[in-house]
Length: 247
Image 1 (cartoon, rainbow, N blue to C red):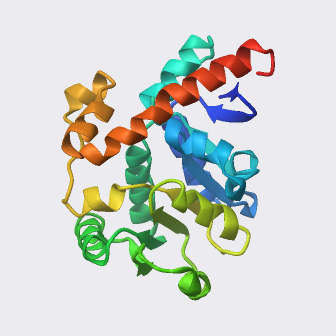
Image 2: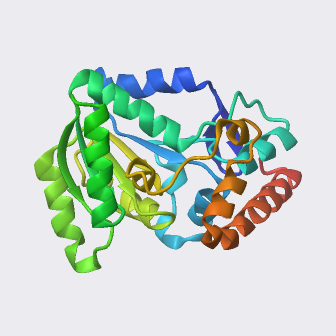
């Protein structure tokens, strides 16, 4: 169910099995442990390898890295690793929302602009009426307010914390405060709040199925072009690591 890539483990099981794992943590009080779902695309993985503030993030016992991104799936295939399917973070966020709706669980939303955050929560609550939104804060805050947000999250006692502040900021926040925060499931969800707010759209299914979702996003959000360089950088680094016999 996991394959070694560089110095960390990538989940390569099915999406259905992953949902069962999440359900255990959220609904069956699974050993009272925490689960941190990391959308393992090249940008997130490269940032986690390069930044001192993310040292050990991918190796934490709570971390489960999903193969989110065609670059990671391609790399695993090149290295002849077993891989069932690409698993998009937005799809797992949707599954978490379903679980929370079915079990009346509490969610705290952190990230995006105030306007998009409010729209996202409104739309999510219209679709999932049993979800309990126990707190929220936009992603535009300075360091002086961080501890207040941490206290607010702990007062709210959410089952799930979604952090939508982009990479590497969302991973840095989770890595720094996961031990302090009393949540069962953590997930960095990038621009997902903007999608739920209706301000951006996901690629058509045909492009998703062809592995071209990244192209759709770049065409519609040209600022992402610079971030594409992380794909070849990560692939070449990982292949070189593998060829040296370290993986």
